[in-house]
Length: 179
Image 1 (tube, rainbow, N blue to C red):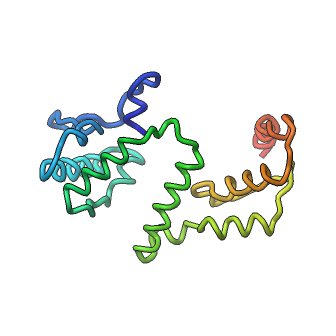
Image 2: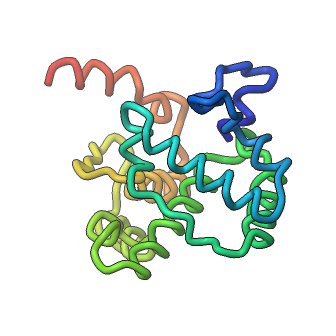
């Protein structure tokens, strides 16, 4: 997705494109490599991302390459590159992300498991709460927004909302300013 944003119509600057020695660290640099060169370059990218300032560095600080077979890594890169991420519905991206979190929570003791609520449980909780239009929905922990997405889906399926009910942003903004 970040690579797509560097191309028209977005034309955004890449978050990180070169390392300190001037080597390319972008998506195309991964696509063009194979075998051991790909594995080494991928590991190098993870290391460089961990050194960046801000949230990006925090996210990648303890990253590891768990894909030891360069052919599998190449296949994953090929599959990821074949998708048009910017054209994908946000809910699909959310489900992919939550699926990865769930897999990580199952594989690793602790970790994301303490922050991740499985979709079936979220769905059950929303059905028990039975949200209605004009109700305030609050999820202080928020995480991936799973409760909000489930509540939105529930409301869309149960109610025919008029334009005013769908456009809650103005009233939400004024309420937020009073807090």
